[in-house]
Length: 186
Image 1 (cartoon, rainbow, N blue to C red):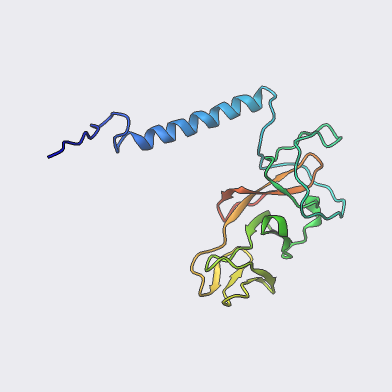
Image 2 (cartoon, helix red, strand yellow; image 1 turned 30 degrees about the horizontal axis):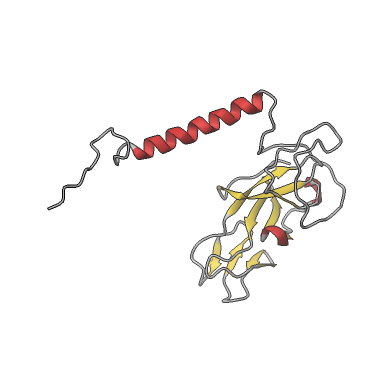
């Protein structure tokens, strides 16, 4: 018979210690980012920024973290997908599809938000249709907030973080999911 070592409570690797260590490490990392941001280092994400309108469009422009020529540094991670549109270019209730992110940006009374265009049923790309989104593969429909209105999909569409680039345009951070209620006031 082989004896197995099991860590006791409070030891590294025990069931009651691992989640706390993971949580503690995450929070310490967040604190370090906050200190770096306050010290003038480039931050990687923000939830507020200014607005404007250039009427331009672009699908694959990447954010560069530069100063955008106006002295304001980009607050977007390098992986964020630039829409090429200023915040004011998004009309209420009119989803704008960004192919490079497989996502939509939508404005409602609360502000801007982004959600995936990938159907939660089998991964097909949804299209904007009427007052929501339609999956052409199996007929699932979602409202503008991404909630399922007709199956076979059972789960709502994921929501993504938004940020403002150094050029003042909106970008989608598909690496960061947010609550469906999250709205950005830009």
